[in-house]
Length: 390
Image (cartoon, rainbow, N blue to C red; front, side, top):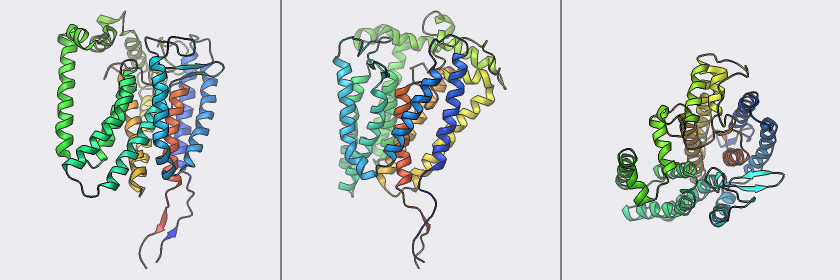
């Protein structure tokens, strides 16, 4: 029997439905965060508008096939780096303001703030997937030299973004590294190269962490580390000793989550005050209102999304699309782990939003752009009901 195409619609309803559920959770969380009266703006209405705009971006990107995405990848990444360079050299103005010690936003009157780094994450996924695909197509027979060359290409690709971001946006830098690591593991590079390289990096990271704890003055003197960055580590390890400095957000988050217990308080409007409750600490708001059950449901939604993306990456027959899936999975997984982890003191606070749920136009558009790539992989993937030879 020959190959017969399935009549199942190419549009991935499963991913779209999950995004709708995230939209509902986001609206509930933001509504609860601003019900305490601590905000003068209506962030819920703004989030709905951003969701509409982001959905349009996702559906537009979905129509592009893998060949078009590959061709656009370097242009998109170059454009993203150009925006980061502008921010890097721009003076402190109303158009490029410094906020919380970082110059990471463009401010457009009537629109709001746009953070280019949120888009650079997705552009990096596109370009690294392109680099891996082209290299593997060129070198069918691989040895140590070709594998090391691929690793070098990938490193040189990500290096400019890290150089431009590491001083002002450590959180985004860590996300870029997570994307890089995820794609290295599936790129086909020999473990004889991967293990020594990442072992060396781990040893270096351990040494730096030891200096942070036992010899912080050395980091400030020789590496130019800002003291406030070290305070984040100390406030994470011992929040009660730094309650008046960097640990205030963490302590309030822990109290809110703990007070929610199993079933939560509901929309009482008299919950624990949580700074940035509509953005970075929205999970604490959800856990307070809906308890352990509500928090578990949110985490489960992310597990289901990752499951579908893993399944999609396995089903597609094009290597480039598989790499796109791995990059997006790495990005979202790290975002979720970092955001929820920082609210419960598992890892230090870095200011990373919870994907699809935290308020923020740039973050939402960046994540929906990534989902547009995933919807495109599904949309252009040819499904067959029968594949036996007859």
